[in-house]
Image 1 (spheres, rainbow, N blue to C red):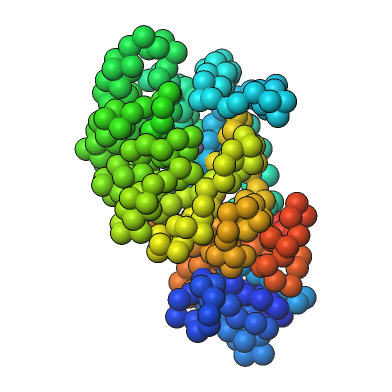
Image 2 (image 1 turned 180 degrees about the horizontal axis):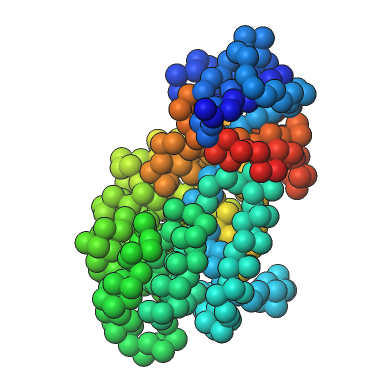
Length: 391
Ligand SMILES: [Zn+2]
């Protein structure tokens, strides 16, 4: 029999359970308790009515929320780009070409070096409350290096994305059509067994709409589901293509026409906003308010990568989204938990309804609002993943 634990004396419990009454999407319960049985949530309700369990944890009047779901990261890489960041902060604009630096370092690294860097970043994210993460290939850009990145990632998460179409590999600089043929052919054959998702960087300087369509369609035929880097640096076809192909998510969404917003609001493709990228490149913020007011589903994620957003902190992204992108604290917390789960088409995570996976974050604060109210402060003081306390 699996053991049971009750966490009592929770000042604010965020359940994201739509069956809970209230004017917040967060399904808030005040003076709450939550019961974990095995790896699942077994009960939530008033602390005074909590049932007897094997173990008891006193939250001491602090807040508990679902573990963060970081639905967009690039964690299989070697090297860093400190110099590029330093130069950019001294006035040089970002361009997609910086990825080549990381490609060279990643190809030169051993498996052990890549996995050590990945596990270091995952531990860092876990300490900040991230209990589920997606991550991608995209710094190998050869058949062998892309497959290797996916194999390493798959040891740590089910949410693995093939991003051979991150940029055109340097060897194919004069033959982008040849690179698209490789990505949709031999590379896809080698990578599909290790991934759930296929992604493409649809952007000027990376892949255009026709190339992106060919890559995502080939992935779908191999059983991979699409997600798209769309409309980050400029207006373009990425968002509408994502909706048309029923991608789980269109990521970045910084430059949107009204038609793009309408498409997102009318489909089930989630708009995943990545404010760490705009922060780290001094770029224009995506307009979360416009998307939410139109009825689109919004997720927040870190985009953790060594070039344009080297943060693993979901609390930091929440603070940016509230301060700079027009989100309320409740909306930002929902997007960093339930929104991320939607962007991964997962129903078992991102909420604390009965039956959900027992992924919880305990804050050293009485309310989830403190995640935005106290930016940069390490508020996460406990993390449970699948019912096991890991922080
Ligand atoms: Zn990305």
